Image (cartoon, rainbow, N blue to C red; front, side, top):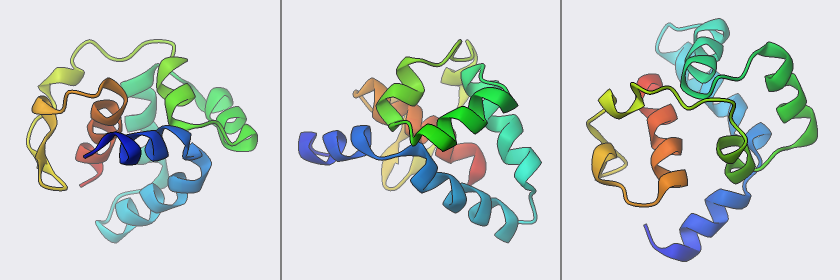
Length: 105
């Protein structure tokens, strides 16, 4: 991914992508609650935080930079997503986006 694509992702609203996470999960027989569980595990946010993030249209960059606690075991999420090995992605925000994508895959 080049820097201009990274910048575009940084500025994207988490609320704009959130419905796609739910749809993706439901197509795979998972629930909205399971998506929330993954988000909360990964970031340390809770339901109240998530509602605020969605209402405020928080950017992905702020979503991850302001996360209460990125889970210490996040680096155990490995594999390929969108043609890139998650563990090899150098950009920290893009890597966290992929850390969130991978369990939903």
